[in-house]
Amino acid sequence: MIHIILNGSPMTLIGEVSLEEFLKSSNTSNKGVAISLNRSIVPKSKWSSTLVRNNDMIELVSAAPGG
Image (cartoon, rainbow, N blue to C red; front, side, top):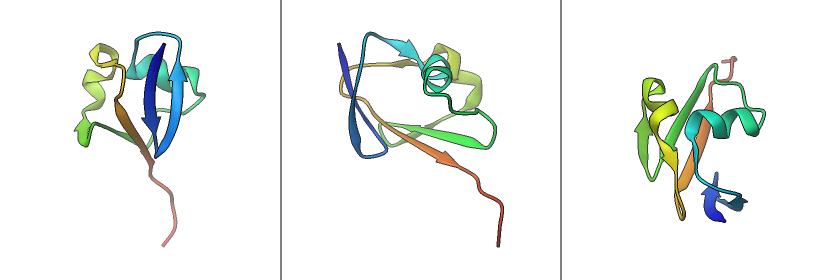
């Protein structure tokens, strides 16, 4: 089991997955989303090769239209 913090809330995963797989499994669109992993922004080009590991802190930020 992998224990992470997602947007400030604890969450448990079955095993290690890439950030890209994690987004797909959580039904989150990858359009207009930025990912912070342990307080560092991960470029979209590295999502498929960056693994979510035990005790990682992930923040998902979505752009919203408006003004």
